[in-house]
Amino acid sequence: MSSAIGHSGGGRISIRNVTKIYDPDGAKVLAVDNCSLEIEAGEFCVLVGPSGCGKTTLLNALAGFHSITSGTIELDGRAVCTATHTEPPSAERIVVFQNGALFPWYTVLENITYGPEVQGRSRREAREQALDVLAELGLSPIADRYPGEISSGMKRRVEIARALINDPKVLLLDEPFRAMDALTKGVVQEFLLRALDKVRKSVLFITHDLEEALFLGDRVVIMTTRPAQVKKTILVDFPRPRTFKVRSSARYLELKAQVFDAVHEEARKAFDAGEREMA
Image (cartoon, rainbow, N blue to C red; front, side, top):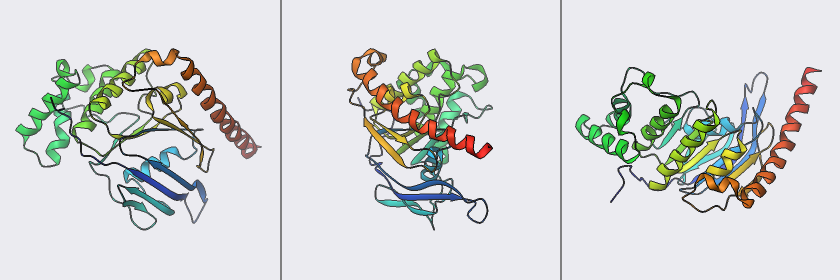
């Protein structure tokens, strides 16, 4: 049986020699410096690094929220962000925001159908597909509820469903589970993995949670303190589908130690730099 969630195909991301300077005529804050990264189509890539190191800057440039100073960001070989041109946000590059973005005046079903309707599908067609997606992802019981009537974890699941129904090539997630307690976070992480097992999408995921990075990602990319560059890349070789049981494996603990060592070194550099600025 085919999935109710579409599969547009493609989704290869190329970040090549990207530099981003904020306020070039004033403070000249160098956020990203000659950064390069390749993400294969269908890969789940996680960026980790100190706060303010430039991770979100890269994600926002890919999403189409701002330009870059130099370099190129490509999607399937097409330049979507350069120093002179930035493609506006679109359904092929969907962002799931940290603070949530459900319309409180719409039901869950209406929130899900909003994107397909904006893309030109009829209300009936959008509703039928949304109902199929909700059923496939186990969310049918809350279809008629409003965001204010469901838990934070359930809201996150609805936002993931709303993103996937638009059939993006790339799913961009900026610390989407940051405010959740550990138990809720674990449930929603497994929900995301099950959804992506149904139809693979390219994912760029930002987090400070090292265990989350290893549990979700195919690859963990550790960024340097600002300005952002790639410090180290760690391949996460757990098979899919994954369950919480991988967290107790010896390999998981081994990879966790590698990530922690690399991130801790950069966090110390960021702390020392902050101390010097305040001195």
